[in-house]
Length: 69
View 1 (cartoon, helix red, strand yellow):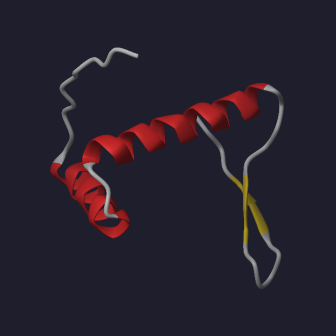
View 2: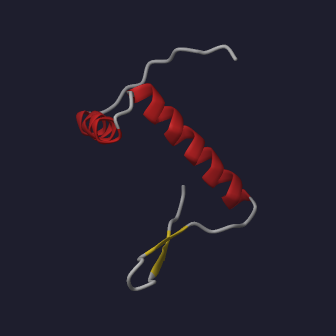
View 3: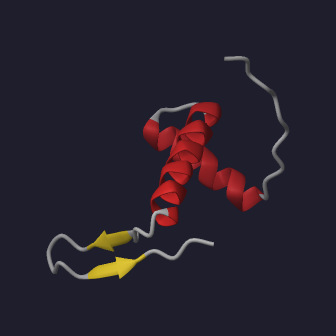
């Protein structure tokens, strides 16, 4: 598969979050953004089927639905 190059403009806050996540996960920015894109794609596929996305508190079993734009 051929690869394309792009320029991404981020705010200072967004760049700080990206760098923090990269350090935490020991990933490059490219790898982290690719993973994020694949995750977003999978979430969209499930939402299009009518599924819902939730976070569940393990202790209380309380669920919160995640609303995607």
